[in-house]
Structure formats: structure tokens, C-alpha cells
Amino acid sequence: MRSPPIPIRPAITNHTTVRIMPKEYIEIDLTPEEKAAILKHAGFFVMDEASKADLANGRKKWIRFTKYELSHIIGELSYYFNRCKDDSLFNFLDELICHLENYER
Image (cartoon, rainbow, N blue to C red; front, side, top):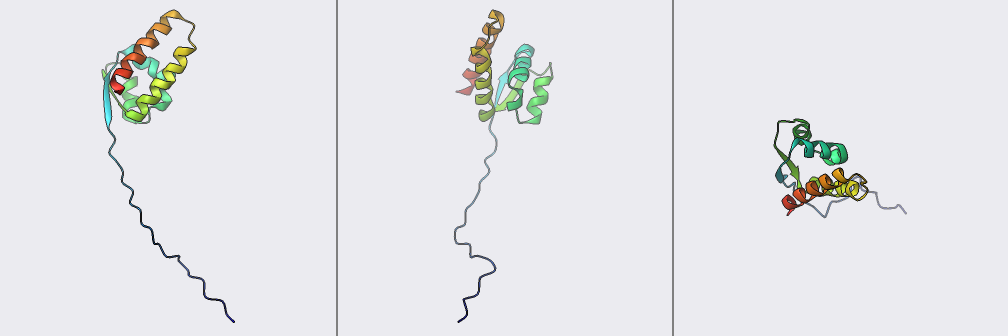
């Protein structure tokens, strides 16, 4: 007896549709010092090349982030805030984190 032939392509019975949502950006006003702190401590979370360029540009005031990037930037700044021993940096990071959290809502 012969075994039944093996199909070359398996039948696809379950079709799924993948929808790509457009990115929603949040624009935040930042000082040059705040932008430098974000680049230094959490710059690797900024995925958008335009946002990275805007952070590096000292004259650009409004910087855009996605919600995902913003939440990770706040988390990374909080990490440095909790381990900070310098009072001036401690206060600066505290104000920056509060400023970013106001936009996150």
C-alpha cells in the first residue's frame, strides 16, 4: 500500500490582518539643559531620527515623542534621579520628570 501524497503547500485556513496604526506624537517644550539631560541619560530610547536631531539642536524648543518613548524616558530619568547624590542634579531631574509626566497624561 502506498501512503497518501504529502501536499506541497499546506492549506491556509486562518487569515489575519495586521493594521499599522499611525504614530501619535506628544510635543513637549524643553529648555536646552533639559534636552541635554534627556540625550545624556535616556537618549537611546528616542527612536525617531527627527526627534534626536531636534534634541541635539539648541534652538529647537518643541520636541516630539511617542507615548512609548516618553514613558521610557521618564523611567530612565527616574533611575538616575533615585541614584543621584548631587543636590542640584537631584532637583533638576525632579523638575524635569514632573514636567514630562504632565505631558504623559
